[in-house]
Structure formats: structure tokens, C-alpha cells
Image (cartoon, rainbow, N blue to C red; front, side):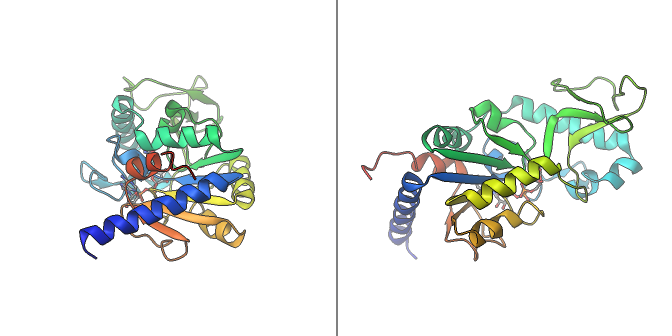
Length: 253
Ligand code: NAD
């Protein structure tokens, strides 16, 4: 495909998705690390996915934390400092605007960075938790901790036990109530977006198949092909910060 053909194909995709969005009564969105990449927050599998010599899969696990909790906390502390410096990008902002325009809207995010909240999204289901929350490893008490850097690592709960980041690690279950609400929203959606996720982390990626099986039109926005690209109705090869604002342009549809 030459450049002219590619531009035409992109314009057709944009118009089709914008039409679907205009007609939609209920929209559900699944986002992953890719939507925050343009805010400068590294994804797990892209460039910057390795910290010191460790891969995310070694650190974001209960086993990694049991092996060396201080190391895992140092990684989270570094991530918190990167996120604290970051700003929501045009993709996050466009999703918040779409929520204001559509009658029913649910944002299911695998991200823990809080950028959707800061962009103004309201109905957010954080299926992998929140990096700004810490939880006691013994009494389960949760608290918000917004310090970009925690001076003394690991932090301790008032009960005396060690705290852990309030996120879901690989191999752990998702918060049940949050997950159930994500399933309900997915089944109810007539339009489902899957944005900036490699769609390999389950069960979150399963929502894409559920949306399709429930009769929604499914649109993927990703700079690369993923395992769900062949399942969706439209796989839009584009960056989230470019594609999402383009859907809000008034085309007189
Ligand atoms: P991932 O790193 O596995 O995949 C990122 C995906 O985003 C890739 O498919 C990539 O092609 C795509 N992508 C990169 N830049 C993009 C852009 N500008 N626009 C659109 N797509 C883009 O991330 P994942 O699928 O979210 O899964 C990894 C897990 O990592 C999740 O559970 C999540 O909790 C966690 N995580 C969160 C953050 C965050 O909160 N920002 C960051 C890294 C990882």
C-alpha cells in the first residue's frame, strides 16, 4: 500500500468508527499501558520495559516480592516518580470527552497510573488496582499514598507488618466486584474499544472476546498487531493520542 492509499484507508476507518460512536448507546473501553506511552510512561513489553536488568514479569509477581520486597518496592517507587511527572495525553482527554457525550460509558483500565482520573474520566474500573494505593500484607488495610518517592522502603502498616503496592500482580486474582462490573458493562456495550493493550494478560483480554460474542462492534486501536487483531471488527493501526481525538471531529454525521 502506498502512502496515498494508506491515508485513504485511515480516513475510511476514522469515519466508520466515528459513525459507530455517534450511534452508540452504550460504550465500553478496555485500555492498557499503550495509551499512557505517549505520556512518557513505559509499557511492560515495549522500550523501557526493563528496569535495571529486571523484566516487569520478574518484579510484578508475588514470588518476586517474597524474594526481594525492597527491590520490588524500589521499582514501584521509580515508577511512581515517573508517573508523578507525567500528564494525561490527548488520548486520555478524548476518552473523558467521549464519556460526556455517550449515554452509557464504562472505562475498564489495566493501567495503575491514575491518568484517566486526571484526564476527567469518571466511570473507571481499575481491574489491576492503583499504584497510588498501598495495602498491608497482613491485615489488608488499604491507604492512599501520593508521595512520588517514599523515603523509607519498604513502608510499614500501623499494625507493624510490611505494606505492598495496591496493584494486581501476575498470577493474582482480580478484585471480584470490579471484575464483575467490567463483565456487565462489556455485555451491555454496543460498541467496545480495546486500546493500547498487548491483549496477552488474562482475564482482562478475555473482555474483547466477550464483547464480540455479546454482539458489540469491536474496534482495536494499537500501533501494532496483537492476538485480538483478527477477532475485532476494525483493527486500527494508530496511536491512541492521534486516533481518539480524531473521533471527536465534527463530520456532520
Ligand atoms: P503491554 O506493555 O503488554 O502492551 C502495550 C501495548 O500498547 C502494545 O500492544 C503496544 O503495541 C501498544 N502501544 C504502544 N504505544 C501505543 C500507542 N501510542 N497507542 C496505542 N497503542 C500503543 O501493556 P498491557 O497490555 O497494558 O499489559 C501489561 C500490564 O502492565 C497491565 O496489567 C498493566 O496493569 C501493567 N502496566 C501498567 C502501566 C500503566 O499504568 N501506565 C504501564 C505498564 C504496565
